[in-house]
Amino acid sequence: MTTGEAPAFDDGFRERLADLIAWRRDVRRFRTDPIAPEQVRRLLALAALSPSVGNSQPWRFVLVEDEALRRGARDCSLAANAAAAETYEGERAALYRSLKLEGMAEAPVHIAAFCDEATPVGCGLGRMTMPETLSYSVAGAIATLWLAARAEGLGLGWVSILDPARVHALLGVPASWRLVGYLCLGRPVEEHDDPELVRAGWQDRLPFDEMVLTR
Image (tube, rainbow, N blue to C red):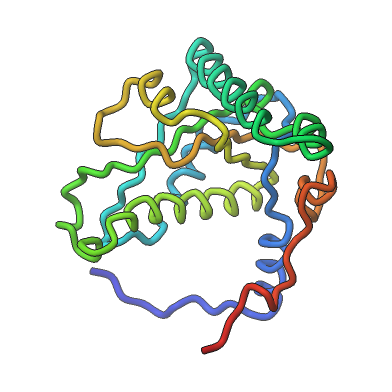
């Protein structure tokens, strides 16, 4: 066990942290130049420092490097996207079809983030009444990865329009692993401090006061 003085974070650091959070975007437009494997592993190591329910550490990151597997994952996304488009009508349908919702063809790094729902680590502490907190823990690790990548000038995109069961079978992972996010990582083609869906006219950001209640 180690003890020591906690680091001090001054106003300058807090301002930079606020900038980092504000400039963290869901990226769909990537440059194709490669990312060094050691940089990817360093970012994943930072993600693995995230808190987890009962210290269960249920995240399992699969680096998808095989081109056939990447194509299979993108085919899965394209099929799900086509099906989703059919659920909209009129101008909303046309706008949906105009959106770029993934960067799987361009991103140099693909990471499938799974939750090991059978992990014995943590001995079930904290999740007896809310077992979904295992997946929440993985989502928290993804958020940490997102910020760590942004701090190094990289972008991350979370692909959610796909069939998780199909991706699970494609990657041949254990039955107890559940897909939480299929992630694309790379250098952004462009930089913006607002979400792409806001710029595209899909949805504005909600006013902050509508998201905070007092009881």
